[in-house]
Length: 338
Ligand code: TRP
Image (tube, rainbow, N blue to C red):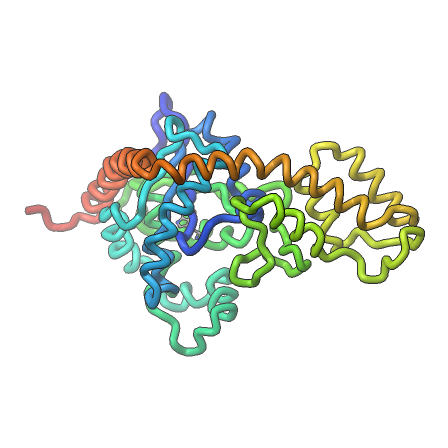
């Protein structure tokens, strides 16, 4: 099926509701979502069912964080008039699509997914991999296609999931003999993955190396203070390395003045620029970025009824779209009609 010409292309992305969002999410996807909400029809999915696939032992956490992540979305400037924010577990059509799509994926293909392989290793499942976890890429394919999304702004680690989605799309369309589903494209941000403040490859709350979007001024100060730089850069006059130096990686991600950052890097490499000065510049930038976010978030947190209304409204819109897709797929596959 092709997107009707008179409608904006649809975007769908989401986040597992396992904790509040951090700067890595901001760079990895939120910033793209903010830019795209004006030109696209955007849905944001609070992926509580996907969160359960590796948190079945802690459903309380998953439920509580539905609101936390919604607050983060609204605080960074996601506008509910432009973007529908919806709750995955309130969209039964997605579960039914997942059930149908599971028949179009082999177990071997699921095991080969590089994202899943990394995640299984990181979670230390050993041989006890929950089947729901193994199959979540199929559920994510249901999310993406259910909304008829063609654009999926995600971090680079999600690219294999979009690929797997498109394989399912082609198989279902082949079986249906017509294009009931649309293929989607991942939109990967310019700055790839933001490292944690300790220099580790990925910022993650569970690793303790994250800076939350809701961080207080003191927490921001402390995070910048602790940031990993060049351990061999002992004196201001010493030449330093900018590769793997988190402060410079963050300046690349957040400083709009690219020429100035290039000049600072050159000076740091030559020697004569101290960590303190670079960190002071970064701290100012991060305080400026996060202060309005924190303030909006706190104001919204005091008004849960409004947030719930936004979620109810977004989920109702999502229900209509996803139910429509489900009916087309059922039709395309020729399921029994009663
Ligand atoms: N897998 C995504 C994450 O780990 C969350 C997600 C669920 C998602 N459904 C989606 C992302 C659909 C993009 C599209 O954060």
